[in-house]
Amino acid sequence: MTSNQVLAARYELTGHLARGGMADVFTAKDTLLGRQVAIKILHSQFSSDQAFVKRFRREAQAAANLSHPNIVSIYDWGESDQTYFIVMELVDGRSLRDVLKSEGALLPRRAVEIAAEVATALGVAHQGGLVHRDIKPGNILLTRTGAVKVTDFGIARAWDDSSELTKTGAVIGTATYFSPEQAQGVAADERSDLYSLGVVLYEMLTGRAPFQGDTPVAVAYQHVSTEAPFPSSLNPDVPAEVDQVVMRAMHKDPNHRHQTAEELRRDLVRGLEGPDHLASEAPTRIIDRTMAAAASGRGTGSRPAVQRPSQLPFILTAMGLLFTLGLGVFLLFQILDRGSAAAADQLVAVPNVAGMSEQDALATLQQQQLLVNTQREPSATVDDGRVIRTDPPAALQVSTDSTVIVYVSTGRELFEIPALVGQTQELADQIIKAQGFQVGGITLRPDTTQPAGVVLEQSPTAGVLLAVGTPINLVVSKGPEQIVLADYTGKRQFDAAFDLGKLGLTYEVEFEISEEVPQGFVIRTDPVPGTLLAPGTLVKVIVSDGPPVSTVPNLAGMSVEQAQLTVSDAGFVFRIAAEKKLTDNPNLVGLVVEQFPGPGAAVAPNTVVQVYLGELAPPPTEG
Image 1 (tube, helix red, strand yellow):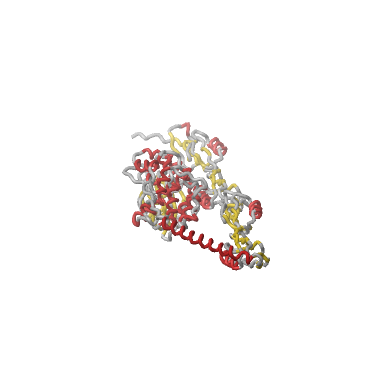
Image 2: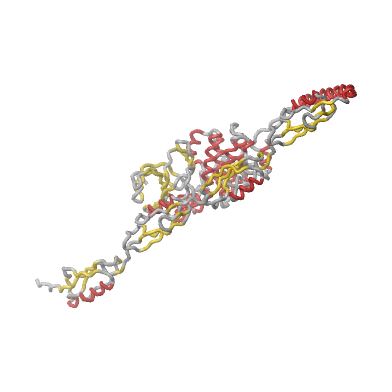
């Protein structure tokens, strides 16, 4: 392919962007819509593999239905002169591969931000039933504004199933990011994409891939059998919490990784906020010997073990303080014993210490020669560490040797936030109120996975300990977003299909003979225009296959009357040509010797069939 070449009479190639293992990428101008696009043109060896082409077309159509700011849009696909191509959004920026090659390791925060946006794109694709299978820096694009876009969704599946994988070296450049199951030939799923993203994040944090080798086979073997060193062992700036997220994403066993892209994205964001926010610790977590060794500092590349400081000075100091305190208590009791007889009949009013700090209340009561027994309990009105009440109560007259119980607040009693996601809004309201919490804000959001009225998200999340009366905010599904079906009657088939795909609707084309609508244009749709549809709804597009055609009969040797009757019966218009055709056969004089269109031609009804009658040729003159 060269610049200025035009594909499908529409896309004018303007420059060459890149060459990959399965395609070349060009910049191009869409002459129909007047916009700049990127076109990926398959190499010739794939174009000759019909099974691959069929699969490629199916996957390209599925990927075209993905619509998200973090996913490169696919506009069109087609074939021109045995060359297959995909038309995509042209991204103004660089690939992550080029950035890593020129800049090396990224700052941990920027690396995590990029990985989180890639995880968002993967979550959208996985919900749509698409597994990428080839997440790598070359398929991650960074715009000039800093946005992240993932490309080649769905195309890797056609590549994985192609016979080209049997050729030597076909996996060079991608084995670096293979999941262990892909390296072993096991079917990839969503968790395989998360492993590959973990490898990409590892490379962003450290400037190098976790596994390296002289051949793709050597690298693939390490994915299956070797534990990578912690990223922080290569880059001390990587937080320990991010270390945990990366190593969990790269776990050899898919069951021990994050199970969804959204779970990985949350851990990436929380990993930068510190250990108190990290959500990836499952209630029951299985840690194999290698991970345990790494955590203790004995594994390859793990954090070096830190020697604990000696506790002896602390122990000696504590023993000295205890001895001093014991001596003071002993002397105090001696003094009290000596004065107990004199004070036996002395009464004092219990001071009001409610609202005081524990220390101030203790000092106030001791000044009145009262003994103190401290007990703690939660309170919704008194702050933590402050006195709630005393027993005996304030102002009551007691002897100076009496014991006063001081109740100190531990703050508001905390209860576990209930799990509400998946419940109906009505039931969620009942649960919230029954457990002493309040219903907070309600946000309605379109959703294709849950029917209207079902809780999609909650804040605070389930399991968090909070005080009674805390408001719980809910995001509730309002069902699939409704799309008004436009009127495509009289529009070209391609334009209608492109518009339906952009709206998130699926379509199926049926052809029908029509004398009124030109071939290739829409006759009608099912459902009819104006119908409200949910995303993903199938729309049948009935397209004109042109007017009906009939076969011209053979009129040779017929008389004018016979020929006219035969032509009329076939639905055509009969016409006798003014000129005649010479014939040597006297039996054909005045009969049909030639016709146009010829016998067997497929033409539309009412087509003119013109006949030529025979005329005897003059005898040759003798010379």
